Length: 211
Image 1 (cartoon, rainbow, N blue to C red):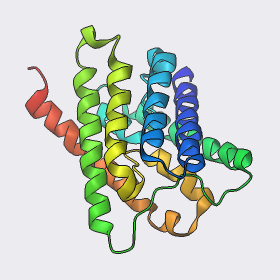
Image 2 (image 1 turned 180 degrees about the vertical axis):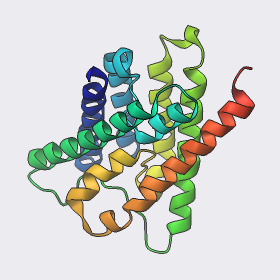
Image 3 (image 1 turned 90 degrees about the vertical axis):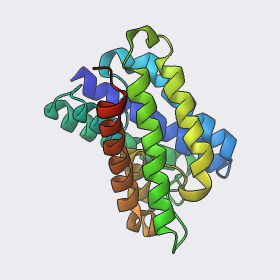
Image 4 (image 1 turned 45 degrees about the horizontal axis):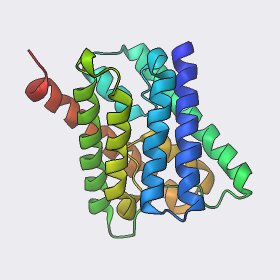
């Protein structure tokens, strides 16, 4: 249960702070990228020793595919992450006094393919970095920093295209409250990161992993 509570809190913080900075800075690319990345760093060194600090269903899927967690934990993690994201979005709306803008992901009409490819590729980069850096025990002290900076990197590229998701839970939370196009386009931000994660996991297992 401690693992699931940790995942709830971690995702709550990620969405509250990351999406919060996106809203108050009008999606300033650098500020928003740093907010999401630094949230990961903070949570990695806070809850990492309890749950591994996935705080992202795409990360949990990668850990399932590479046999680092069980199906039971995968289900528990994903449920906790989604609930954490919903709670983070709800609190953010209360703080801002409005649920109209909560940092929801989205793309311009007609740009579906570009959005889908962007999310798949950015998630691939993110998950590959996670699997690589966590594969060696000697990287233990720097794992959180590497993962956080990688999240900053993918946000720098993706914000102008999709707002950058690479995390289904992060997208689900705000979309539920914002509704409209955010909810209609939500399937892209659920499916694309999972596809990117699966590809990265297979790539890692058969190309990068030490035999």
